[in-house]
Image (cartoon, rainbow, N blue to C red; front, side, top):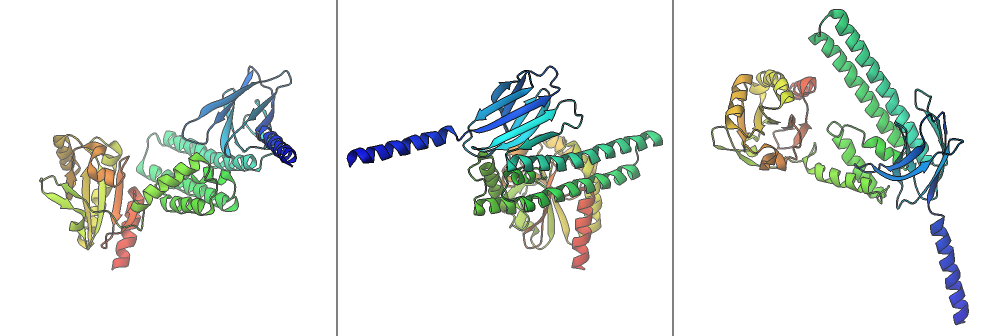
Length: 375
């Protein structure tokens, strides 16, 4: 009886060992017209760091193979000469890859992994909108050269076209995610969205991933869920956190001082070129709506008081200003998770964040819409 039990355990152990040995994924590839390329590199690209995982030599027929283990489905890149090709691999996948290095569009064929086919489809979407952007660049430069100079009207025209292309691309990514929810490729599509403009959608997506346990063994997905959880308390619809900061006159200023009106917390600095370029628009909007219940608190990330004061005077910023003169290390920028400027938060009379990081025509449209409703 004991011997039989031992034999059964041995059989199970051998079976388990065989499973482990077969658990690797394989990539079998063929390169046409490889030129001087002799070696192919497999790079792990599932996190912010891209690292070389393995390398393989091309044989005389331009073929290569990788056999690799991964603890979770992950994004990989094949580096072939100066070109990179995306794949998603999980243990057990038998991926077949082929490409022609003379193909100017760098297209490739992939089989044996549905995730890899999906990431290829995502890349095709990105390439499509990237080509539109390139054409817009060329058209803009041609019109500037024809006119002999840049103009505000021309810039405004193309700004709208660029914005539409970005919006169309973003909508295509969200649609791709909705159609491929259970594919890891949908995650890489969603994290390609502008995190400022689509924060609400990204937070909702992170909560969906956590609830449905999609890809949560992947460290990149775990990190994303963590980032979105940290961002949620300062997202649109949340209560803005109270703070106290010294004003330019050295008197304390609190967020609650603005209760009952719309206030924009404008994080900026004298040395921030985009901030200074946006200031004329902010001044214009402030003058339009300051008598209708709109105010601004400028929070500077300067460290030099004199430069801060000179910039306020030069740009004619007539609202209240405050700073700890500690750059990004101040308690208020830290509380509001400000890592780049210009950055702003618009808070309603009840203290709720209703808009974030809007500038130019977006700020103009938001204020017009908000105060037309209030009338």
